[in-house]
Image (cartoon, rainbow, N blue to C red):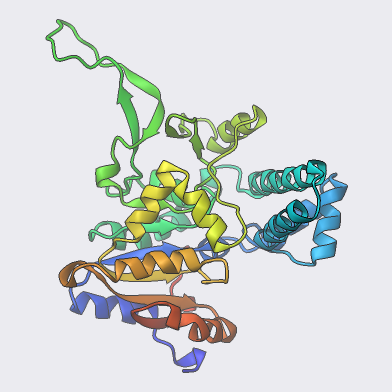
Length: 347
């Protein structure tokens, strides 16, 4: 099928309504790019790194000749494995691993520096339009999954008080007691801790996000206290804390990172058990995304009445269409492709 002949977003949504089928949403980097391509793209991040004072990272980008952080980290991981075999000198291997960690930190720093300063940089109209798009899923028993690290999704949900947008975080009651105490006043934790509201959770950050931190005991969410949320995150990062952030190279490395974190594992398992239909927007299904395809295929294996029936993949152009046509057999259910340009999330 030609790109110009693909069905519109409205058409597929209306079709799913006739089937009375629950729909879920998977957002990729295209969601953020559709807000501002000059900020949320690998090219923009690459430009930031090219301007860094770290000469080693600059040389790596030149030698590997790519603008994809994941590819560079995959190359470095492969190099570290090879070096382990050919040399007993741990100095080289450790230097490679330190460079991988430095690249991950620079990726986070780049997003932090390029990110809109605060929620009100998004206009009220943009925020309301995006909220309306998201609520069509959330208010109809659907879930929203995101592989993005930025704050756009969180900001929109927070600013518009989306009542069904539950990310699983809440304040822990610190002075609970079975005994009656006169004039008892509840005391709650300062941190927003994940798990308290996970049974009602509908928002899932599959690869982590800038606002999520692992303390080693709990997964916490940075509190929005009236100041700029990004400023609070910067303070944490300046103190040496870095967000939960899946920046490993290939799909296996990403999945390994996911399974070693309780929050990420829970989100991944939820994607693996969705029912009805899944609509994707801005998600490329690249070669490093096979772990997402694996989760989708797990959802297909549920009981007849409670399984995932179909996937609707949004594409932006002819090249995207050709790519999805090439890889769609990896997904073991009916794959439908739609024109992503026909939905204006921010307009």
